Length: 67
Image (cartoon, rainbow, N blue to C red; front, side, top):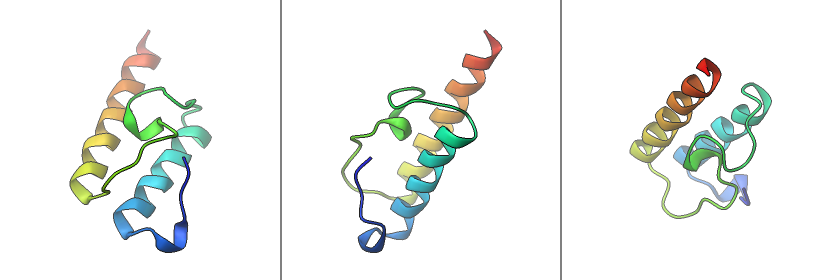
């Protein structure tokens, strides 16, 4: 994920934090569990997008570990 922390709005900063936690805590790779873990995600970052993509990531992760 290419980003400039200092130019990011608050929603994008939290998006970046959850992306990195996906790597560090959930051991996810780029491309796993939805758009949040896509390294080339771009576009407009909003609170609703953060919630949607975060929930998608966590739900996909839950399914992944149940296998």
